[in-house]
Amino acid sequence: MKKVFTLITFIIASCSIIAQTMPNAGFETWEEKTVLLTTFEDPTSWNTTNEFTALGGVVVVNKSSDASEGSFSAEMETKQIPPTTFNAPGLVTYADFSVDFETIEFSFSGGLYLKAKVFSLSGKYKFSGVDGDSATALIYTFKHSDGEDADTTGYGFTYMKDASEWTDFTVQMIQLSEKIPDTFNVLIMSTGMFDPEVIPAGSKLYVDDLSIETNVGIFELPDRTVQVSTYPNPAADVITFETAEPNDERQIILIDNAGRKVKEFSFYNKSITINIGDLPTGSYSFVTSEGGQLVGSGSFIVK
Image (cartoon, rainbow, N blue to C red; front, side, top):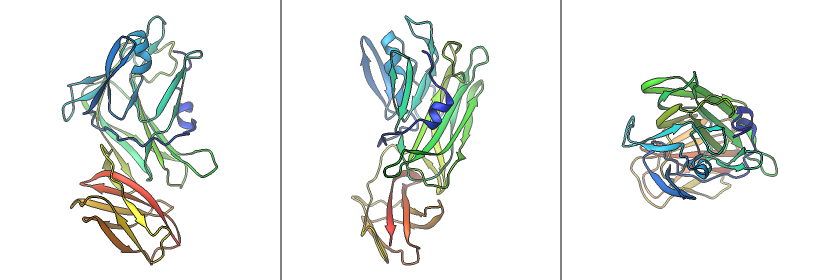
């Protein structure tokens, strides 16, 4: 597949849609799909190259019972796609992507809605590379402003070498802006080469147990979301946070426009009213966690 998977494309591609996904960070849940006569499973909430490689009867991402924790992991393998002579890597991402079958070029948009600075992505992997190949993990964040194109606020990538046992990996984010992003994406694939004419077939990657470190702590990527509303918005002296169900492990962290944590409080009942009279005027973000898992985010204005 020609002209696919250049780092520049991934980092500066415009995210025209913010996808409200429910990330499956441990790859525990999978969905059956069929393309032409090829049936396969994709990890819930992730997009993979399977829908395109299955046109050639090949599946490059599979559910594996070889897991670091839990029951399953994601297995990605680079394979030749008939009737072409090109090899396609196994790839998982939160972004939506499509392929132009005339030019064989991929385009990416969207990702995980997340209003927080991401400092790193960590996880577990196993890898067996062919001809010195390495696996790749890429992360990036965007900020959407009214009437403007999305700004890239950070990116990071790492190569993963051969590892026969489950091994830790971490991707550090390079911050390009002081802005708080609103979109986060992960892209992991079974090659470190970006020319499909020289990518070797046979490299195999297993990935499991992903988590992110943000400016407000370390969270697992969410398997579900919790809707939290705020009122009044804009607010002056007090603001109320409200949700549908109580939870005795729920916490909320408030973040200013510079990414600094300004307040943190427990939110056990269906609603809570807090004093914000000490906060300067401006825009603020908040993230909601339950038992250390990120389950939601939002924003409000102090006037």
